Amino acid sequence: MKVRSFVIALLVIIALHSSPVAADDLEARLREMSKQIDGRVSLYARNLDSGVDVGINADEPVRTASTIKLPIACAVAKFVAEGKHAWSDRLIVGADDKVSGSGVLADFSDGESISLRDATTLMIIVSDNTATNLILDHVGGDRVNEYFASLGLERTRVMRKIRGDGNQLKPAQGWTREGSRPENQRFGIGVSTPREMVHLLEMLEQGKVVDGNSSRLVLQMLERQQYKDGIGRNMRGASVANKPGALDRLRSDVGIITVGKEKFALAITLDDMTVPPDWSPDNTALKMLSKLSEVLVANLKSQQEPKKAGATKP
Image (tube, rainbow, N blue to C red; front, top):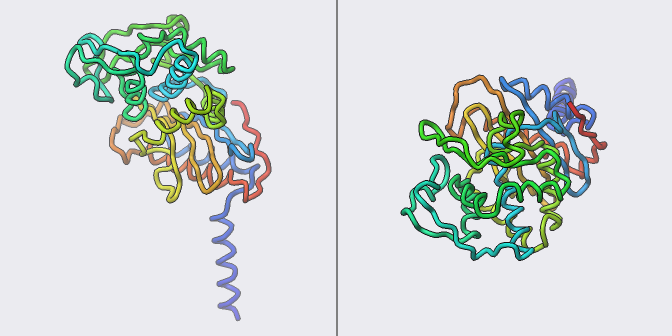
């Protein structure tokens, strides 16, 4: 009898620790997890079906790194839908256009051309830096920022073109009006907030960023995106459509995770990390992005019937 009682008690304890925490405790749990990273964590997540959400520093402007390429792709799709550009527009890959870092266009022969659609695809699925710069030259960084503003994104802005990485950095150029302001230059290529990134993802999922077909095209690019070491990396059966970003002291990831019939939009940034730069797929920051995404999805599932967790401002 005592053994049976002990087993029952043990099962209860296991169930309590493995089940989703109450909504009121979710933010506290996330903050406790964040202490495992020697840096600053900013995040926002929303169940796109139920509207349940949670955030930490959700309205804090953060360096985007390559996650800014997602809103840029949305802007390009909008310009094409409006007839201001065409997916068939040709972009010339000149020697001076090439920058180091992620992507493949820097290895193309000088003078090769690529369509606007292919450049946008490369910008997303392999985070091509050269493609990003060609696109900004073609459509205009300030026009891209004006489009962001039209969506109600007040803090999401492109600042300049990409310089490359490592010892092959080029001089900063292609500054937008927002980027040329001294107080904004600390953000590098772009700035946003976790809440605005999730808002953009939600509009994209709803077909409101552009039209339905264009929105699906961008989502398909995110699904084919090839860096899957962050959010959702260990979630079996989940579909992940995301765009990550990385700098020496930063890791970020924004995207939509689909589990069953439910969709979850997440934006997480880990910045100001003091650990030595680690570009391996198993570095501490990427593992933390994965763990945070698992906790967020598990606790925002509507079938768990949590109370609405209002995302607090810092």
